[in-house]
Image 1: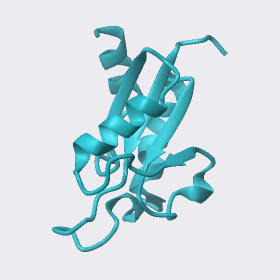
Image 2: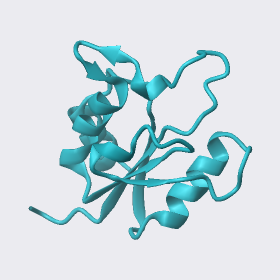
Image 3: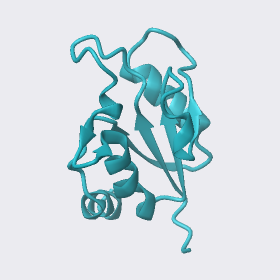
Length: 112
């Protein structure tokens, strides 16, 4: 594997107050939203970190971190991801964008 020195940070720790259910666990075409995202990110990064304040993501094979600063929304998740990352370059995505593609991630990373 070619080292990219990039960490993928997936924000999955929201309260889902508007949706009423954990968005990353919603099924689409036989897979959870988060599984679509992990598939899109994984070819483009060296490591993936999931930021979630629940145990729902513990069985996906990636490190899961709880927010360092509680009850502060997505910025707290971004903060936790960046503090937890070991790389200078990171890509941060939400768990509720299942149509994101590996090619889009690659394009973003190649043009940043």
